[in-house]
Length: 329
Image (cartoon, rainbow, N blue to C red; front, side, top):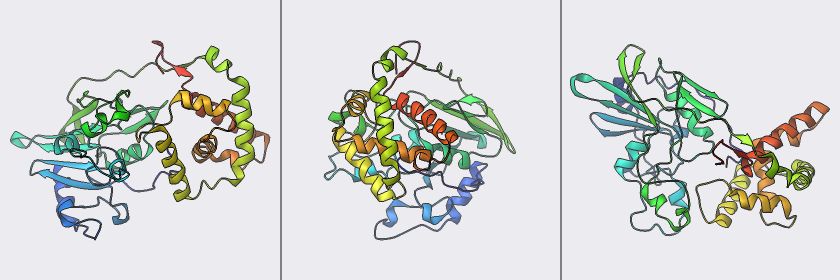
């Protein structure tokens, strides 16, 4: 869930070649603090206030660009931080770090340069990841999001179900679709010259657009309408501009669900909209309002229409009313 997250504004990083990445790594002064000992080698790509967006040297011929705050980061990883006791082996291995990095630059024999691009982990929205890729891709490779799908220079970039083993082997992850095996959901390009790149690999086919299961959704028509009315009444009082409050609400959802990976399970979401006393009823209202803020400031009939459109889109996602042609949500 993306509670209250705002896309960071920032310029292109200007990393257009392997040598650009090497130079940036060598130029940036290492960030050292009580919370970040020297061995972590924190070198922010851009603003030092965004230290989680960093360049990391793996070897003389391999560097990765990391966005931080996800399950495949070896430093900025709240999936590990939130565990009061980190079990043995609950770490991101060097191999997983390289494989799951948003961007990995390599230099091979004869000076051949390649860039591998990876989308977020899990079949849900990764806004921070998209923003990072848009700024970190080299000139010559374009970024586009269309109909909820991501593309690099016109090639579909699928989200990956490959996750670090420490995530996959946790008891609460046993029923998820994540696997500790690389599914190849990435795009690799060879740098052919100044701002020129050639695709190297097999293209991925975009999935068919899902359709709303109107029969299933129709069963909850009244509950859906009642929940919107309740959210609309509560919206002006919700502290969605307070990131600490939003984080607290999100963590309580994760604690209730017993996992730190996915948005809320659809069966639980259906309970929330049908049970007025459900303990997560307020939490999911915060989720909607923080993602779609129109409901907090309704001033016209156009605003009302927009809220209904936004709510319809949100409820279809959270309740998994949308299905593909093979029946999967």
